[in-house]
Amino acid sequence: MAALGIAMGGGNWFSALALGVTLLKCLLIPTYHSTDFEVHRNWLAITHSLPVSQWYYETTSEWTLDYPPFFAWFEYALSHVAKYFDQEMLNVRNLNYSSSRTLLFQRFSVIFTDALFVYAVHECCKCIDGKKAGKELTEKPKFILSVLLLWNFGLLIVDHIHFQYNGFLFGLMLLSIARLFQKRHMEGAFLFAVLLHFKHIYLYVAPAYGVYLLRSYCFTANKPEPTASSLVPTLPFQEGPLPCILGSKLLGFVQCFGQSALHHSLLSVGKAGDASIFLILTTTGHYSLFPLLFTAPELPTKILLMLLFTTYSISSLKTLFRKEKPLFNWLETFYLLGLGPLEVFCEFVFPFTSWKLKYPFIPLLLTSVYCAAGITYAWFKLYVSVLSDPPSSKTKKQ
Image 1 (tube, rainbow, N blue to C red):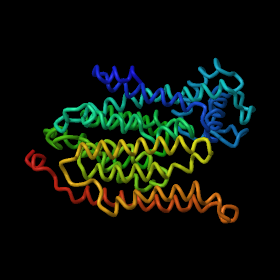
Image 2 (spheres, rainbow, N blue to C red):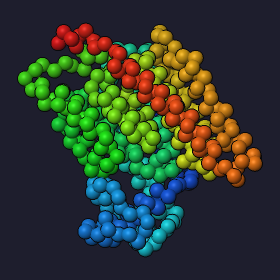
Image 3 (tube, rainbow, N blue to C red):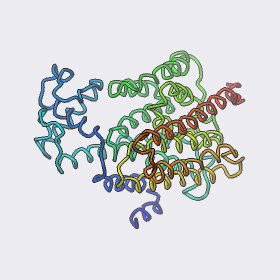
Image 4 (tube, one colour):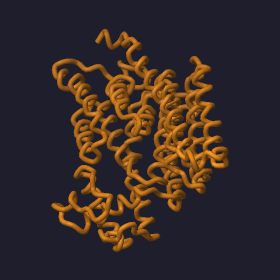
């Protein structure tokens, strides 16, 4: 911690944040992991042991390879490192195989590939104008955005406890968005195409990308294009593909609220209204991830990490927009505070009731319904914001 403090004071604050969250990820290595751990171990075995022609036809395990080709080659590349840890993990017939070396390799593979996410966050932060920056480092939009992205609670528990490679994939997505706002449209489009070949779930964002590229690149070859600073005084993310991308996510918000909250971080340091939407969306979305970690040892970890992230998010954005109206109205405040009693009931009261054996699904049902209401409200508020905000006068003049 002392080293982190020195780095922060010396101006290397981004490196300190990245190093700090990496150390935290290392501390999470021994925690519970889901069946996704076995899924990816099996994919390592398939791509390492079999010819390419059999990758998508191997059915020894129920966890067949069902991601696009680039992810299969990604697993293939990882498998050539995995063999130096434990060769047995690469045997297709070793179903549900686990060892300490396998655990270390798979955990560290997620941590290592997160380097792309760290780089993408750095590139996104470079797109922020510093006009709203405070005197203190912790009040600067770039610093706040870096913390909201690098220390994102959802990514921490889904990737580094539950086990997935979302950080790597989000890195491609964020880097693509950063390139668009750097006017490097071809690079942005290429990176998004690569992303689609890694994970097909991002396909529903493609229409938003298509519309934005047609409007901002294909049909403006002979026209002067507004600069980012002329579009929005403080943050260029407010004009461009972000609202359109976030809107398209409503179609799949049940499984993708974590992605939406992460992307909305880019807007949260620009306007108080967007900060309010982000806080509702991320707090509700993150709480809805709690059922993923259902084992008792992880209960204190998930509660503590969410409380820390949520407290920082609210306090930092309130400080950033302290000269504007409150971020929450009374209804939103009441709703968010309601997450506390809901957690107490689901984790500490319901297990001791007579309903536990007969209706074991009640906690999950209550969590799903309560969080769905909050996420839907956040999307509705986002749509109202996008459709009601008048275009800037400077944009009209150009």
